[in-house]
Image 1: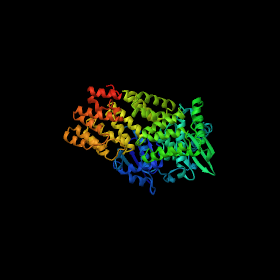
Image 2: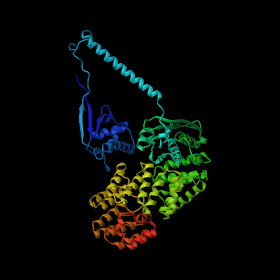
Image 3: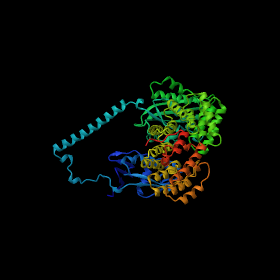
Image 4: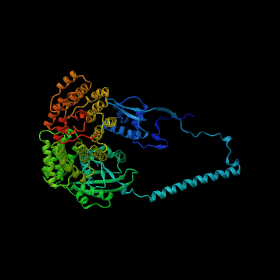
Amino acid sequence: MALAVRRLFRFGPFRLDVDRRLLLRGSEIVPLRPRVFDTLVVLAEHAGEVVPKEELLDAVWPDTVVEENNLSQNILALRRVLESAGAGVVRIETVPRRGFRLIAELEEELSPPRPTLPTDRSATPTPATQPPSALFRRHRLAAAIVAGVLAAILAASIVWLRRERPSSRDVRSIAVLPMRALGSPGADEYLGMGLADAVTTRLGYVRRLLVRPTASVSAADAADPLAAGRRLGVDAVLSGQIQRSDGRVRVTAQLVGVRDGGEIWSETFDVKEADLFTLEDSVSDAVARALVSSLSPSEKERLRRDRPTSAEAYEAYLQGRYFWNQRSESGTREARALFEKAIALDPRYALAYAGLADALHYFPQGDDLERSRSVAAKALSLDDSLAEAHASLGNLSLFTDWNFDEAERRFRRAIDLNPSYAAAHQWYAYCSLVRGDLAGASREIRRAREADPLSPSIAVDEALMLYYARRYGDALSAFRRVLDLDPNFGQALQYLPIVHIQRGDLEAAEQACVELSRVRPVSGPPLTEHCRALLLAHRGVRGEAEAALSGITGRYRWITVAQADLALGNRSGALAALEEGYRQRDATMLLLGADPLFDGLHGEPGFQELLRRVGVRTLPS
């Protein structure tokens, strides 16, 4: 008889059974979502080869148009699984502007199943011809098997009947997923995302919970809450559905434990469209009470604060948060307009002012930073317990006013109010750094990372702390991890040449400059010109370096000139350029005491005087 064969791939500790759609580690099944499994199969079939992104998208989502981000999420999920094999044993390599490659010592084999072949009846005695002792042994064995199966079924039934829901006491971290819109998802997408953001903000004030920020989750996560929870590293996820009908809005919410998928709590909320913002109160309060047996008076009050006086203002605020979370220039413009609309509809809506202050921080023009200061102050005049507004004012005090005492006070207040607010920890880290406290800065960045583990901006700052600690190899690895997730993330690409230069690897620095040419900065020096001039200076090619510097113009020319002049041994030129940065009161001046590029100036009295005027300290050696 012809036998079917199964395709198997072996690599590291894993065995990929294509036909049975299983990934095994030893005898343990590794759970993968269907599209993630399909992605792994394509990479395994072309192990060692670069698989273009377009081919992966076509193979995994045939006849379907999807965003490239879906593929990135699949690659991220696979990397998390493969990392368990140990560093470098099995990995997925990102090839910039091309695709992905599975790096592994892979063996392919064809494994036939164990068929039940027809027996030669003439060679097997029938029961009637078997000896009585053999017949008795067979019956006894069959009875034992049946009894064992029944016992197992009975035991499983008892366990199932007696099982309890996952204990809420085990939940210390939670992610709130966007509510899925039923009926007309396009129209209510912002409502589902906005409601998740509002609930996230309120739950952040419950001190015993670590709440992932809305920016860490996406609409795609709502399709598989447990997978999203594992990716975000939380104990529980809150998901739900939202539906409008006949002038009413219904939300069905469910809180499940990530470890075993068991339900902790569920409830349905039904309100009039005119009372839309009461959903925020109801869902936040119910989830908090399900997870925390007793709330402090301040936590109870916080859960019921910031209610607008009109449903239209609340909808505008939710739409504003939806666009703000996109972190794009166009999204920021939309967010500003919507927050301003919410304020016009309800001039005493504190959260809308805080949202506008946040939006004005990004892509600022003209007097945007001063406007951010005034609207954040307005938010606090309406509600002094808004962590976001305190953090926004702290950010301005740090990077614009150079008032480090006031910045620290604001950040500490924001963190005290909402320990889950990642941005407050992230900005507070720099407040510690400028004061020469690298240990404190690293601690706050770790806390920011714990609160928002998927933020590329926080991941870059985490890598920078390693760079400032002169741990260049670790910093390089950390920057590369960011680029594995987003090959075009400009902040990470910007620092790669610098790290290579500090390691003395100018060839790698030159290649990193080529990579950097893919991105265009929103603000700051022209990155590729900056990189080329600095690289020429470190190679000692004075004429070419000076020619490259002469082609750099604009407000940020000073930092490039200072770094290049110092590399060329021109300390007086470097100090003159830094004086220009001081006159501009550029925020980059705050890092002079930490940046290894300026270590060569630490013995110069002029440099120490400059640090004193700025108010920053060098890091302890």
